[in-house]
Image (cartoon, rainbow, N blue to C red; front, side, top):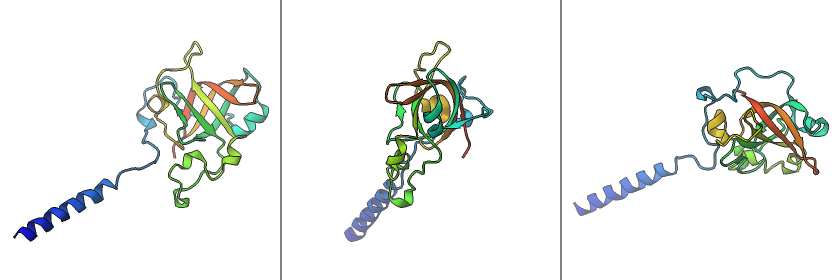
Length: 173
């Protein structure tokens, strides 16, 4: 009888532990832009979107621009505490999970292409100040979401591009 109880206890423990491994690991956090109530999210995609790589070559400081990109570029593309994140040109391929990459949004397989095809997006209020809510909740986005943003370009001495975005459209997968 003791052997049977021990066997049942061990079997139950093994079964319980097997379910622990079924959760998500380093995958993109769930987000749902359909339920987002944000003044910054628009329901119609803005016209004339330029890919990030092209914008980095041509956009001037303070120019109004509409930009398209995929959220990523690092293992954590979101800035905590404000509505800011990085986007990468959609033409740059990200790693697939089949390639053994637990965080495909960091573009670990194509890092050499990222530096010329990345931009920072800061969602700003009417006064031009960064919104103090994280982008995931504010916009209903996650890693590898494709977004179209509209706003003013900021350039620094190194050629980095930041968009002070007043409108964000989230493309459905």
